[in-house]
Length: 293
Image (cartoon, rainbow, N blue to C red):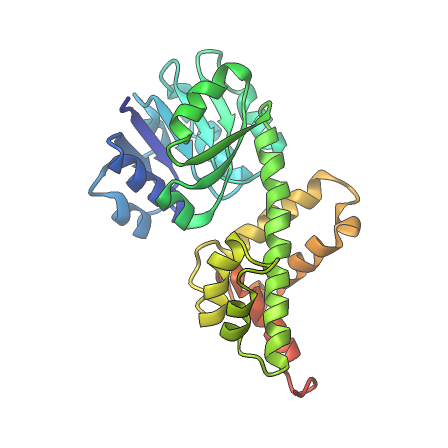
């Protein structure tokens, strides 16, 4: 059944959500904090609202694609948008923040509305193709309704009560960061020993390293094309959130800590590129004159 769906946040993921859902026949309303590429990308298929409060009015579902916990609170709560939701509206936070944020937002909802946390993994290609992994934190009464809609964007896994979706996504981000960091280190190491990145990446196919990340990140490493599909700053934010959840995490999660350090170096020395660009500071260190091949 076609619905009126509101998207709050038109970054790399939000704008693609608008385009996919519009293609499926839904009536789309969108809002973004700033003018620019996000609004331009969806203006032909969505009504552009001037505020979050205006955007949510009359919507049967509201999907948030916002950068962090503060943005979610500001856009949904501080703006007053939560008080202008139609009765029965489903609100899904699809960005990555913390379990505490999800539970705080839920506490501000009346029983007439339904809030779920549903962060995603799969990047821009995943949302375009409808193949995202979606980590759903929801009360039992809301699972079927959320799954019916969000299932058009990918595979929905119900993790438990509100907040557990964010917890699962943070765990996912640890794994992804470690995988990308390991792949980048291996490519830079091979290059230091005279093996071309493209040749090494191709040779890895079919082996234990093969998988979704090699398939999606490998070509970026081989071509040294670090146009953002997933911003390094966003992934670093996610790791920082993960470490904040468990006091011993920074000392105990040594692989994740190494990935965190690679992302910090990338941002400091090269800017906010794709997270695959963890390769660059590693290359610089291994291929510098103090490490002759």
